[in-house]
Image (cartoon, rainbow, N blue to C red):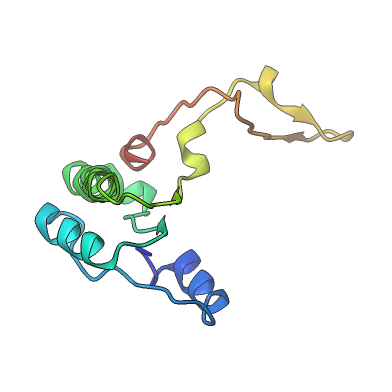
Length: 134
């Protein structure tokens, strides 16, 4: 698991306390270190939750966000692709990838409000560097 100290990761870690969970210690930007650690552990499942998540800050630190959130994920995926018996790779994304959506795509809640509802057919429209990297 990556991102075990974050909001979702810490809660998931608590729920999995009776299971064998390896928390990745390598810097996701260090491809060799990530590959070495992942290949030595040979997990059945990888849960990737690590990311820089401050949307507004991503406009000021675009390179850092892209490196950590995109390159870090690619490094982990590359390492995972070498595990013969990997059953699942779970990647946490964000609703931010949908960004602004036209009002015609929103659902009326029976009152005067519209409810944003996303599904597999919703077209992504990321409008922040954070969202693009996710």
